[in-house]
Length: 326
Ligand SMILES: Nc1ncnc2c1ncn2[C@@H]1O[C@H](COP(=O)(O)OP(=O)(O)OP(=O)(O)O)[C@@H](O)[C@H]1O
Image (cartoon, rainbow, N blue to C red):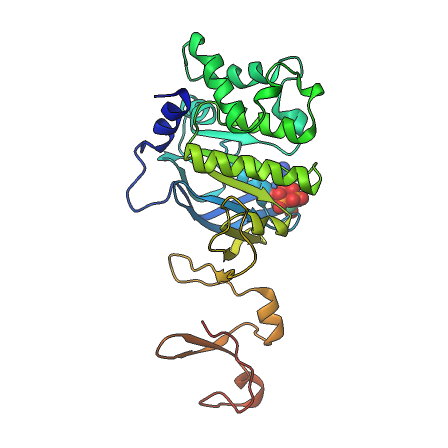
């Protein structure tokens, strides 16, 4: 078995994930910051389930809560309330040692700032082999494993160079190799292409897809760039600290990144049946405070509540706009 195959086998092996649950499960996650007497609700009851092996993007405007979510999932921050589990680790209940082990072995990170990912005085290969010490990989096996990773990500020729001698895209691909060095269950990437031009950014996405497809590592990319949706099969949009909508693109996330054809937008339904309607729908159809539901044989109709203004009525009026067909 090659080093990479061994890594893949470890990544794929179930490490005790609770059956019927995703690899990542967030339920009603709340994070309140208190600064100088002012309270900011960065997360306001966020729900998210990610299955093992997924490659997904979490998108949202600035201030929507993406970084807060990433800090919690990566074990750097604690939520104020709610539930968060990753690979059978309860992120609210981890002790110091478990947290350290979680950060070293269960998850890997690629940050936007290329300089934050790599040590400047080490070569690409030394950067990749460094974290293997945390997972007690025998010293003699580290270079072969590191080279295999650099090769998978198309930067084996950079092995002897220091970060300052690499392009931004090469640095990010080496950073993915570093993050994947201990075959984590999940790789978190925070705006991994934020500092790169489009063509270089696509190379980095291709590298993230290879890590996902060939090592079986679940990859979660956080970005404010909605165009990233075209690169992955599933995009979850956060709005005001909650998961608002999801876009699924059959065929995306494959070699060519897929296209926009066949993309379908979904609203997120939480465990107790709450649904958040996209703002463009609530504005377009004049939906405020409450809506009227009609049960059809294969869908539910959502109608503006005009009764409040126009008096009681039993059915939708002629020419009234339909709120939602699904
Ligand atoms: N340490 C903190 N103290 C107080 N408020 C904070 C803190 N960190 C974040 N916030 C606030 O929480 C909200 C969500 O911030 P967060 O950084 O998670 O959003 P984001 O979607 O990652 O934004 P960006 O894309 O600009 O990084 C914002 O209103 C932000 O001002």
